[in-house]
Length: 78
Ligand SMILES: [Zn+2]
Image (cartoon, rainbow, N blue to C red; front, side, top):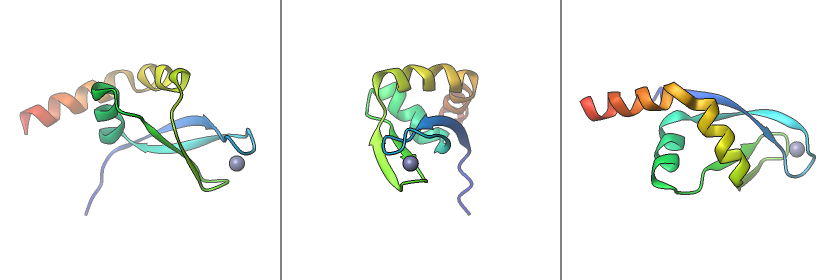
């Protein structure tokens, strides 16, 4: 069973501007933040995906803080 840890990150839906909580897989987001690849965000209310804007990436970095560094440490140990 794949139980990848996820983080709840508040995003603004580009369609209705409603703020919702997106469940993002910590591993994928951490990899994207580290490698500079686009971070894919998702709004369930309109079933829409988009790449995180610069401000959203900065928020994600702050939001994830310690957890994604721990994830990296776990990964390199495995
Ligand atoms: Zn929406």
